[in-house]
Amino acid sequence: MSEKVIDLWKEWVNQRWNPDAKFLNLERMNQDAFLKRHRLTSPASPDASKEAQVVFKIASKLRPEVETISLAHNDLNSGRMMTTLAHYLPKLANLSLEGNKLAGWKEIDYISGKRGRLSQLRELVLVGNPMRELEYKNNRAQQYKSEIARRFPTLEMLDGEPVTRVGFDAPTNAPSSSTRPHAKLSSFAWNMEPPFIAGVDGSIVSNFLMRYFPLFDNQRGALLDVYAPDATFSFSANTAIPPRARIEGLHVSKEFPNQRKLEWAPWLSGGLGGSRNLDRMTGGLQKVTQTLHLGNEQAVKAMADLPGTKHDVAGTPEKFSVDAFPVRQGERTNLLVTIHGQFSELPSQGIRSFDRSFVLAIAPEGSRAKQSGWDVVILSDQLVIRAYSSHEAWRPGPMRVQAGDLLPSPGLQEALKPLPEPQRTLMLDLVLRTRLNLQFAEECLKNNDWDLERAMANFEQVKGNLPADAYLPQDAFLP
Image (cartoon, rainbow, N blue to C red):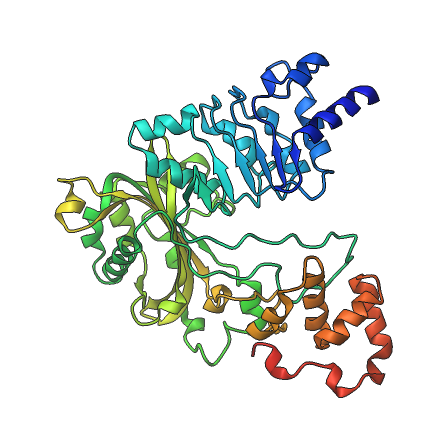
């Protein structure tokens, strides 16, 4: 593309740019008089090749930065033209695709997939597209909303309506490796969030779990009714001791005297087929099929052959973490529930950790599950049994990179909030590694061009001359 043509595109983009509103109007491009007069192919045209990429690249240089783009009424039947949108405008907050011809979820994948996700999108408009209108026509509006919310975790508004859910805060971008080479972090860039339950009444999830686990512990045969006739069940044993648990000595600690009584053999070979750990499984296809239990009767028989357990879900709920949200499976929308926690194995009373993933559906009227008082029916159940590791791993708040590392107190985190990124992350890293107070930490980084490793080297040179009040008190960090 020649410089003359690129200059024309720049002129056109500036005509459609509203800097006060940070809004780029790319509506009805196929009818645009400027493009027709200069014989430029519309970026929305099926014949376009790199035109959209050129426009987005030019838009990425606009100041102030673009926050809102409207691609409404462009007769788009494919999302292909948006392939590079996230690359050039990663901070885009609002996008309108109103009045186009997008018919399938694959068209949305261009801006919601791993490679091209608009990770900071707050508002999306899809009114007037077949994919949206068909869902509403077929009384699947809630499934449509849930699917969009799943694809865009930061979304706050959809088609002019608030997105109702518990969401995670949008993650901030960590500084590039060139900014801080070989940095040894004390905490991860994201905090551990509380359990995430969205798109479903939380009471349905809690009622299911509070009834399920006591039966699993005491009367597994009574679970027959809650499993669908074509349900699947499998379990796998991961015998490796988690690195943090090994460092903390949990498996030899006097606090857990029964850990040495535990044996893996009943989990590896029990359950009428044995562990389905595909990374370590031998025996070929026969073993693979033998360890997948099909139907409610086979599932319950397999469970009955596993060691006894005691899940204290009522007494110590903080030792369990639950996430639940809708998932689309074919034409149906089901509920995925994942639980991380621990149980006592009987009769040894040793403690193991576990992960369990259920796919649930609303129990149909007249089904055995409904007649037995269950709100849901289990379609799939996957159980992973692990060597014990502490439930501190999912305690809300900062996450330690390694056991024993410092973590900032809520007050310290609040004091750092006014700083922009990447300065905030750099400041936190330096404070956790040196205990410097914010004034000295900022001065140290500024004098070293915000290069963390240079700042650390500088600190090592001068720390012997620093006054006592250059350091934060112990209560600035979590115990």
